[in-house]
Image 1 (cartoon, rainbow, N blue to C red):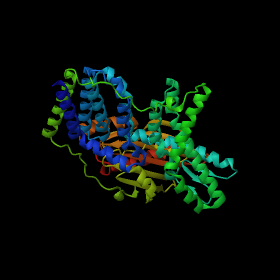
Image 2: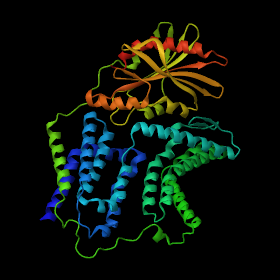
Image 3: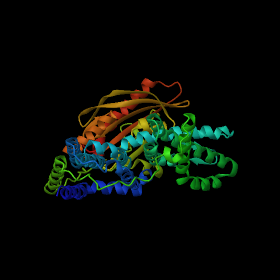
Image 4: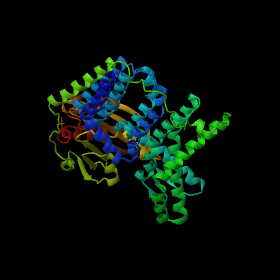
Length: 515
């Protein structure tokens, strides 16, 4: 009776989890099919299931005793889901799925069995997309590093090349930002593979950790090598040959090369440390041992902690039917296409943005206008508006984007703009002095979201969460103004010009960025 009842509870948890987490699961599945960086995710649950099955002989004779720690973890997962549901942020719902799953498994098996299968279960976290702001910052830094190393490889062959952030100018051919980062899309699959290999690698803990952590530099270096080969190909055989090679050299070739380097690394670790074992023994490739006798896993009484987790899930599913469906609110606004190009002493000219950047930034609307006054002062005004940031689209901070364009941030401070208010709130901005060779520019930027003006990126994320819960809104925008600093120019005078411009546009922004 106990065995049957436990199976019923396990089945109830599976069905109830699908009902409760259906939208989050569908979002994850869509990401696997549409986003190359996470296309490996569809295999991760199958691999995790196989790894657990491979070790079933170790817990075959253990009785599942349950754990109230698992019950608490499952409740935490349900609370995390509730926060994600109220805030309409998919990323919280997606992580809630795995937290709840770990809690249910622990509440059913108990700590002794859970320790055996914990690592295969943790592997599932590699199938969940990173939060957008973490992904953007990480990819921007790695792309820049990869481009710099790739250019160094090209120069080793005596080829003249010019680097502008992530744009590599070879004279007759430009390798654009998107092309330069294509190889990095295999970073996440390789990190997942590194975690898997480190798990089956029967060696000291420091060796496993080294194998896992080395996946990041391996991916960056291999992508840099790819960029270098493209540059040499362009110089030797022309642009058409490079474009064909670029297409053929992408994809699984990069990934398999990284995979090969990872195994060479492990082979070297074995040789350096005097390990002469057979590869089958080192990598634990043996088939699972067939357990003897009947399984004792579910032979005991029903774990009370599993009953508690099941009750919590049933209550959560029931509450989902009675709670009203929360639709995100999108307030009315004026499109940036109507932003005035003439006001005060300023005259502007809108500039189109290249489609490759529009696709990367994923904003709802934008303004990119070059302004000039009667004194000859020139200011570039840019603002990107997002009607919703719930599904991963989010504001890209200039701190990440400017280095990608080759600009170095010399100083970054926060200053108040005199006589400037936004919806009655004094305007405080990030002030950055940036340089690119002999060129210098002064940048003011701030985040304007739902009646708030902020300079701190992490505070922006916090208010996005709380406002999504209590206001049902996640809309917001970045506002950035840039003025060039001429050689020998007066920085304080340029500050005055930017202050004047910011004070002029601040009252107008609420039409385009709703309060």
